[in-house]
Each structure stands twice: as structure tokens, then as C-alpha cells.
Image (cartoon, rainbow, N blue to C red; front, top):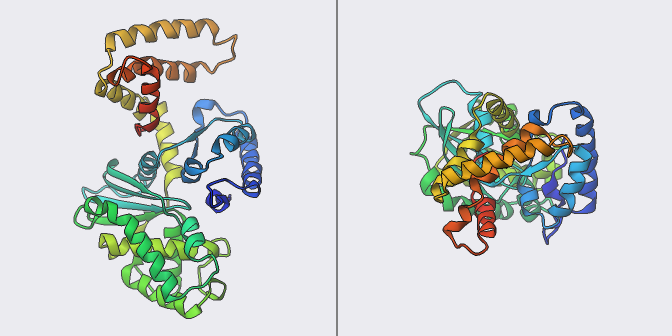
Amino acid sequence: ETVRLAGGLTDDKQLDEATQTRALACLHRFGERLRGLSPEAIRCVGTSSLRIAKNADVFIPKAEIALGHPIEIVAGREEARLIYLGVAHSLTASPDKRLVVDIGGGSTEFIIGQGLKPLARESLHMGCVNFSRRFFADGVLDKTALKTAEMAARAEVERITQEFAHGNWQQAIGSSGTARALREILELNGLSDNGITAQGLAQLRSLMVKAGHIDALDLAGLTRDRRPVIAGGFAIMMGLFSELGIEQMDVAETAMREGILYDLLGRLDNRDVRGAAVAATARRYGADARHADAVERTALKSLAQVAMAWQLPRTLSATLLGWAAQLHEIGLVIAHDNHHKHGEYILANGDLRG
């Protein structure tokens, strides 16, 4: 169900009331479907729009009540990891390195991976919704508007070109709505028979300029839902094709949603990347492992005494408490005074996997 939170962000980065109302109604419907499922089988995540919305702290509690489950705001690089996990599981096995690009509503993720392992991950603050609002708010499609938007996209991508340019990978793959929509438009209008191509995008640009306005754009495959944001998504795709030297891009049918499911399956099968991330962080900041283990044992014994009375989900609470015990002293690497606050800052900004 499409809500497009990014479209409801005001100029001062506030999520407007109308968008909040639509989102809460949608989450309430989702919550009805999720009723009765085990909390361990559910993961609810928010992405770029909730990362930047200044009133996210007001909206998220209302969203969690409507949904009936906690919502986790994932960092851009974690979003990229989940996208790659979803895409990689849908591809045939290959020793090649693959570039995966996911143009969302408010951000674009770039991942180079091999097999099921992501090797490099980045997230840039540009998406089909915010670019469409920024460069095509009046709906005009002319050479100037398109070139300005494409150059803005190239300027963003330029920051990661050295790591993600052609030569570092053998196959380019797009995922999510913008990539699927562009492939559909190119193929149905005879502009490509091989996914998304640089030549096909150039021909599409000519058709867009000829139309002159988004409302006059008459293309097979362009849905009513996609029309308002196609220009912004197109400009980003053109910019990254040019900047990274991409000539052809395949399109995956899976993305972040499937990645979250595979991540949950990994947790159920004791392949939880979160535990590995906690252990790596503890080692990196020199935590006293023996002391942390002793604190964890004591904390878990205390939890066992109160979990039922406090109506706590036993497995989830034990997992979170155990991780907290392992990481509770990492702030000492900065200073003894207020070490708990230093530790909080490290964890909030450390981009831990999972």
C-alpha cells in the first residue's frame, strides 16, 4: 500500500498532518493482519523519511500504537544491507561482483556484493519523491529542468564514484519501484529489450522533453501512481548511469521487504548478524569480556524474576538485555565520566549491522 512519507515532508522537514493520517490508517490495517503473530516473527522498519523528519519522535509512538508493534528506524547503510540481502537471494549463483542500486522515495542505496555478502554499502539523500518535488514541482519537462536534476544527481553520486564506478563490479542490478517502472516503460515503448539501458534512457528523455509536461506524457507502462514521481526517479537514474559508467542494468523483483524476511529467518536459525555486530563492537572498543559476561548473567537472572509479572516478551527481552550488558562499558574508551552517555552516542551513530 503506497503512502509516500517523503511526499509529506515540509520544507522544514516536518511530516505534515495529512500524510501522518494516511500512514496511521495504513498501519492500523497492517496491525489487524499481524494480530496473533509472535513478536519474534515480526520486524517493522522505517527508512529515509523517518530518519530526517524532525517530528518523527511524535509520529512514531502513534504509528507503533496503530501497528501494535515497535518500529525500528534503520540507518542508510543497514537499509542497503537489507536491500542487498533481498536482491541477492533472487539471483542465480555467480562469482561476479554485482552493483545493486535502489532508488526509493527519499534516498538511494548503492551496494556492491558477491554472492550473498555485501562488500560496500552507501546511502545518498536523493529519491524519486524529493527530486520530483525539488526539480519538477510545476510538472514542466524541458531540457533545462531535466539537465539540472541530472547534474544534481551526478553531484551526489560523485562522492562515491571511486568505490562504486564500473570496474569494481561486473553486473548492475536495479531494485524497487523506480527501476521496475523504468524497465517497464522502456520495454513497452520499444526503447529497450534488455532491461534499463543508457541508450533507452536517452531516448526516453527525448520523449519527455517532447511531451513538455508530466500530465502530457503518454507512455505505455506509466501508471497513474508512478506519474507524479517518474521525472525525479528518471533524473537520478540518468545521473548515476552517467557518473558510474553504467551501460545496461537488469532489474530484480525483490528488494528490502524480502531482505527483512531473510534477515528474520536468519535470526530464527541462529544466524543473527546482530549478535556478531555486538561482539565486534565490544572488541573494537576494548570492553572487558569477562566482566561483561558476569554482568549479563546477573542481569538475566534478575529478568527471570520479573519477566512474567512485568509481562515482558521473555526471548526478546533476554536478547536485548544480554547485548546491553556486553556493551554497557564501551564508552570508557572516551572517558570515565559520563561513559554511559559516550556509549549511547557510539551505538546511536555506529551503524551496527542488523
